[in-house]
Image (cartoon, rainbow, N blue to C red):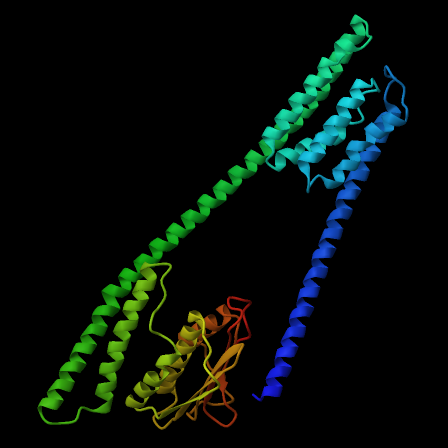
Length: 411
């Protein structure tokens, strides 16, 4: 890439980054505006309820005046900020309710905003703050009763009304606390279920590791030992060991190492297969040649720092493709491996000139299914199909900057 092209690419990336940031800021502003509108609408509904209770309320000790309407609606107006400042809203609604009572206005109006503020405060985890606010409000409200010029009957009625008011407040607080406790119990139950599922998965993983160790490890070790003995006997007789025998010896050794790495991954959930990546591509191609498959490799671009999962997936795709060539392409088939590195992706392509029929799509086996699963898990794209000019092609594009995204196309 020329310097001018690189500069243009960098400029384009900068513009796209700024555009993405602006779009995200716009979305956040829209979400905030919708939240404000929702809170304001709820506060307006509560205010209408307060107006209704004031208009329908029986006569109190003091008739309605401008202050009555201010105190009656102050709590409703404060509910606009109930999510952002729940404690401040609780104080405002409590003060409005107590002041409304001290003035002797008809009871009822400020209670509804107070109940909403109590619920929001409890939901926000401010239980101690609510308890202090409620006790102070109750003390002020009841302590003012002896100072009022009321007869015994009127004093008793006022006392009953104020206890009833704070009874509603306490009931609302208890309901909110019970709901929070119920949600906490559900969250704990879900957490226990997730832990049980993880424990079951760990047990199954260990069982698979034991099965692999008891079956494949022994068989591969026998193959490796027998191949080594055959190579040794050939050299002892002064003969050059056949290339296929050397390939079997090398492949069995690699299989044993990779199996041990796989068993390590299965036994340790946070582990990863080590030593498997595109840096071992020359060894893989050389082993294919030793097994009788004419193979070449070509690399384009400068290799970037590859994520481990991408590096491992690319290697496994090439490995499986070469294995399929040896099994299905025919004895005279040649294969070319192409690896292309780009800043945002790595592309691996394996072409052979074997006997694949362009008119007969391949039947997906374990190998192709495994390729698709690896590529899909990384958010890439996979193409595996016969070539129009004959032979078979496997092409995988693996992104470097965003892994684990949505499954890419697999054809």
